Image 1 (tube, rainbow, N blue to C red):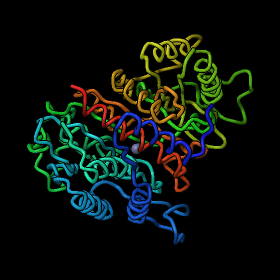
Image 2: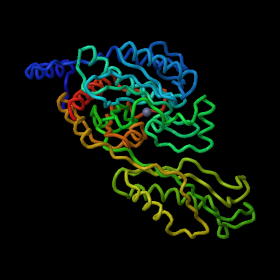
Image 3: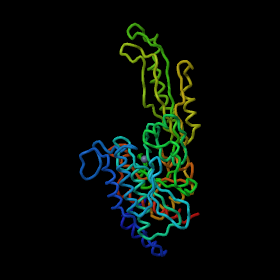
Image 4: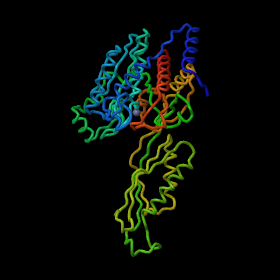
Length: 426
Ligand SMILES: [Zn+2]
């Protein structure tokens, strides 16, 4: 583990660059901090005066009034940075530092919507961090080979018709049912337009996303940079356990078929089975309902949700097979409810991120993301990569979400280096 004084690190890097005759470009961390705080005030519901942190946190749902204000702020910041600003029909926002050498884009982005009572870093860091890198390159008269495009995708955190909405519309990964057509209609968006974008998706050479880890691993290991190898798949199931409802006073214990007692045994078995599988598989029972749900009736039926997350579908299927064992078909029913496939991010882009961290003398860890991101969608159309920075205590989707500024700076420096090397490659 290297422990560096920041100034010393920068001095070393400056020396290294000087020797190579390359101009060192330093990100403007104060400007980024200012922008993040400015964006954070939009939708903030709390008493803090210095920073939009704590209390009820920040609520900035896609297509809300607060979201529009946030979009307006970021559009203005993009214009001020000299970017060509463009909105697509669903409300994704793009700002491009144009190149006269190539038609293709290196896209760098994330989202500016939040969950209800969220924090100031999730998504916003990725968008404003991308803006800072592109702006600082432009201010240093960097001659970019590719169009460098900052993207703020709408509705990443979930809408009535699902999460990563804007990025899925952009990549064309959305099939519209009636409910979805109506959702867009309500917003004044013509559904025939939702896949239209003046940036041709075939022209996206790479996608990069800087994001907070939203977990505890980096902080626990005292590592500033996470290089994301993949994003887990999610499988959700509806589980029903059948017993026999009966009188709670007149039915002796040995004659009961209590569905809730059986469900409890099953939930404990889920935990044990998941822990026994090698790797990072996680399983959660988050919602449960007993029927008839009366104090004096033995439960006859219990329904609960089961969610599994892993890179490999086979492992999740194995868990289902194992927990089914020992139960008869008429007492346990497990139905598929939702499945999202895992994605592996591009290895070459991962290598570029690793080289950039090495160049800057920052420790890094290769890791899997347990949360979904816009990079899921983008990885389906281009070589995508993600950089994680530590989340304090692993807290996110909370008013207490925090990342230290020193880690924010390291993340943006790695992002900047990675953009530069991708811009040089074919
Ligand atoms: Zn996010």
